[in-house]
Amino acid sequence: MEPSLSTIGVVGAGQMGHGIAQVAAMSGFSVLLNDRDEQALSKAEDAIESSLEKLVQKERIDAELRDDALGRLSTTTDLKKFADADLVVEAIVENEAIKLDLFSRLDEIVKPEGILASNTSSISITRLAAATSRPEQFIGMHFMNPVPIMKLVEIIEGVATSEQTTETIEAATEKMGKTPVFSSDSPGFLVNRILMPMINEAIFAYHEGIGSIEDIDKAMKLGTNQPMGPLTLADFIGLDTCLSILEVLHDNIGDPKYRPCPLLRNYVDAGWLGRKAGRGFYDYD
Ligand code: CAA
View 1 (spheres, rainbow, N blue to C red):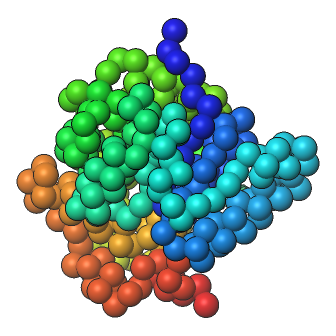
View 2 (cartoon, rainbow, N blue to C red):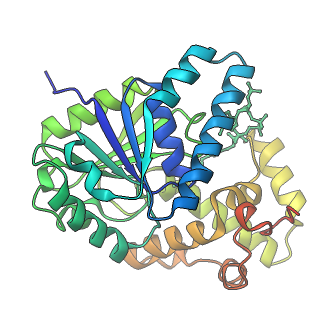
């Protein structure tokens, strides 16, 4: 039987990190959420409280679970507090050099039997694992946004990931009420390999004047029963994140079909990063 986890550390208190921390705390794990920025941590605490409140109001959880989850969650700016974590999930910026640096630091801090996981949406798990001395205890654990609502977690083994690590992470995923799927360590894994070309094609369709932003979204929403049209979804994910995933697909697979639309690059250069920036394909002000 795989060993069970009790303490989970999450690095990065952004959209994904605080969602992962929330779901882990709701599922009975003791959770420590880290960010180097105090303000990001207090924003994350507010977001978690308001998400839990929403779930109580919708009667998806009761008030006792909300309070228990909040009681199991604490925050810190000090990575050294992760020394006793059974699992640390990284959810920082989608930048390989920054992740490599973080994982080599975590490798020195976290107890030798601890598992290190990355929530990367596209970067090679094998390459990240190689920055540590424990590649057999390293794995990809890719959650979807918004984490409290979306049921899927992609599990990605690196070349050296042990079977025991995978079994432990599969069990933890299920304990969090999520359904795992397994992807090999290939750029974009399963979801983004399929989703990002669709989003990119929607941006090309707008760029080439084939349809308006609203009609492209309406076409896919009403025509293919998606909860959000692809341009709304791109704004929701963040246009900078979409661009960096497309660049990983393009650079690593080498097929021109993954070339990011120039309009996407222009929007990112302009700081139009989507919903979080107040402006993307739509204006949120
Ligand atoms: N916490 C708690 N509850 C939340 C929530 C949160 N953070 N976000 C939404 N909800 C709840 C709402 O309260 C609502 O509950 P009820 O159904 O009980 O009323 C429900 O979720 C639906 O929300 P809304 O009514 O506000 O809006 P909606 O119907 O448009 O749903 C959505 C919002 C769930 C985000 C939906 O539009 C959707 O599923 N969109 C697609 C999301 C998606 O594709 N995500 C994956 C992106 S790809 C990714 O994440 C991977 C990557 O690497 C880029």
